[in-house]
Image (cartoon, rainbow, N blue to C red; front, side, top):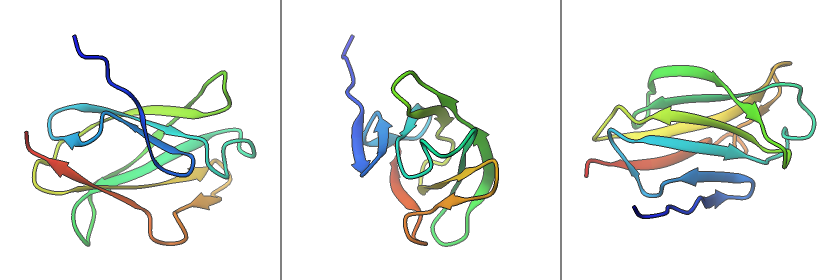
Length: 107
């Protein structure tokens, strides 16, 4: 079995595995600006280029190292995974309004 390494795709944002492939479950780890300030963090995500579809807010779990983790099922084979983070009090980390966008590969 190949051991996969989590990759930092931006400061405080980690993805495993990279590249993202349709049909896989991807782990998102967040240690950004909300990590130490929030009692709860949510991954706000969707798929698409331009307009997002299958949009959802996924609660993240806090880990011993102060990061937040969740898993996402990649359902769209010919698209992109778009995401940002928000706290329970609606404070957002959205990459300065640009969100994070990762290409989804289909195998």
